[in-house]
Amino acid sequence: MSFSSMMKEFSNQVKRSDQKNRKQTIARMQLNVYRMSNRDNQLFHIFQKELEKIASPLPPLLLPIISKNLVICFTPRSGSSWLTDMIEKSGGLGKAGEYLNPEHLPGIMSRYPALSLTDYVARVLKGTSSYNRVASIELTWFHLRNFALALGCRPLKDSLPKPFDGDSWYVWLRRKNFVAQAVSLYKATESGFFHSTQAQGQQSDGLKTPYNNEKIKKWCEHILQQEYGFERWFELHRIKALRFFYEDLCDHPAFILKLLYTFVDEPFPEDFELTESSHKKIGDEHSLMLIDQFTREEHQFIEYWIENRGEKSAFK
Image (tube, rainbow, N blue to C red):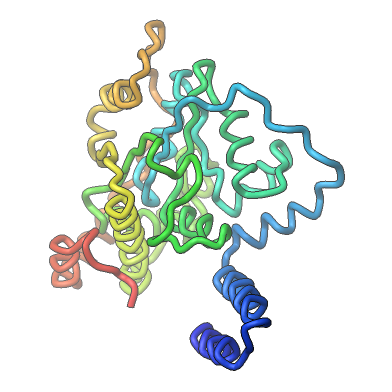
């Protein structure tokens, strides 16, 4: 049964039921809508699976709790790993990670078991916070959307619990050139080579990735849809995020890091000096060739989205 037909059926059941059974019917309807909305939600299902492994009662989450939360919103291949590596090394903004990424959840829950997703986030952020009780988390729009759905919330309608409320500090990291970003994501997903810290053999596989217009366009839309989701979410909750691009990070990494400390009103560590990161750009001449070919073939598509990115949904 489709989502819309299920909703219609339950609506008819509510109309047919008498006053005595109406509340029970509505409660059953809400439960089934909740299950339907999470049918394809990896975060929800993996958390439920990990929950079964917890055999004993958990100790309470003791004070002091986090004083400041830094939420890093990003799109894939925008330099987020590089940024969070700098944050962790600086020592005063916590250890940022993709704690709501379904692929990372089992490993993280083995260190921070919890009985609910909200409790899980609280325990992780407390455990990864810095000496000054500042914690950071990084996430894509799809991570945040799935977290909301797993809690029974509507991502672009309802308020969410901490740290995704109005009391946190938000960073919005994107990439100016979304075509180069999509090509980078295409090559990474095809070859399995996502970061310069991986093995050299995987890097050579990335060089061999053939041109594929359809897949590059799909990744463009994947990126643009996440921009749209975050922009609508910021607007709904009146969030004023600190905005910068991957290109800014490449040109001025030390300045960006100091800017983050200023943004959350924390002193920059006096003895910290930014050293060369193990995360490096992995774009090459082959990437430029793919970008150039896609730009020639899809100039109208690109021009349209330069004009409308963040304002329109990329998904039909």
